[in-house]
Picture 1 (cartoon, one colour):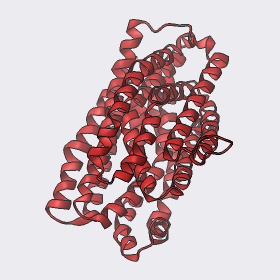
Picture 2 (spheres, rainbow, N blue to C red; picture 1 turned 90 degrees about the horizontal axis):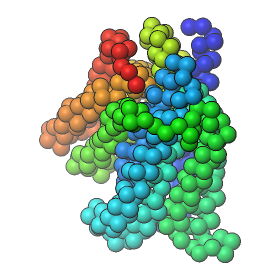
Picture 3 (cartoon, rainbow, N blue to C red; picture 1 turned 135 degrees about the vertical axis):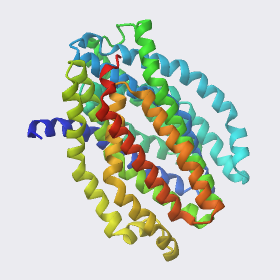
Picture 4 (cartoon, rainbow, N blue to C red; picture 1 turned 180 degrees about the vertical axis):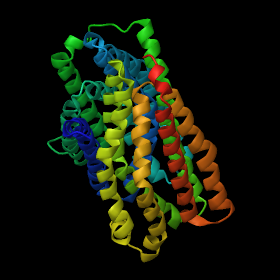
Length: 440
């Protein structure tokens, strides 16, 4: 691969990766801030964060659609229309997010009461989640902007805005949790409000940047046509459904592992945390591939589009290899960062090594999945990902774990197999090039 192509991949992928990494760092800071309020507050916000993740999963699925269409317009030389899908994404975020927020805020007390028996956890969790749910529409808007900035190769705007949001979140949340500067001491509710305020400020920053840099592309000027809306929905809805079912699948997985035992559930939480952190480079590189492939296809160069996905993966191999090394050769020290009991560390050794052994091919699957989304093959991605997760892996996990009693390692072998099969199918689909005929 030419040095110029490598630089182009890294220039696009690194800001996205930086933004995603900052989100993980913020999650750790949030745990630290809320942890001072006691175990009930920590448990409540942990559950609430997962519920909020499921609540916003659907609305964030429109970001790949915005990116795919905007990048295609750039490639076609129709830059003046590139912000039309962004405008559509903003309208859909408001139309879906506002009523969804209202409905879920009203239902939050019942949801917590159904899931948690401890009144203290319910008392801490309900106001925190309600404040977080206020921001659903704003999160949808922010993700639409991420898709647009990625499509026009200005992912640095995404990184800058996200880092600003995270810094403000720390200030807002810490101030409201502890009631500094004469403000009321709100506890966990203050943490939720602080995060929502930071998200809204981020939305305002995105709009400001859009007005400064995206007006020539039609930002808030060009109204999406019915055909453009249909294209946005045709790509966005499958992606949204996939995101929702993917997040719900983790809830089912934890429920399954909970039937094995508390120790297995504790280790599984650590394994999932490490795995989701390790796949961030694959997602960031995949988003870069989506833009590069879509722009090439817009120029009518299907061969170049196909080659871009492989060039992106060639850059990622070194990153995936570096991530695999500690999982394979420093497994116990890595697990010891999260758990102290020697028995729990031993329980997680083989599953974590399996993650390390498969991350190179799992990374290939992530790059190919995002590339397929970038060229408009969202329905294929949804069908494959959902069928493998819900039709194969989760039933197999139930059989191997609670039914046959083979434990956590057997479930992680099944997970590795399902992820490798998914990577193989996405790679096969990419090589078939049926996507070259998709119009967006």
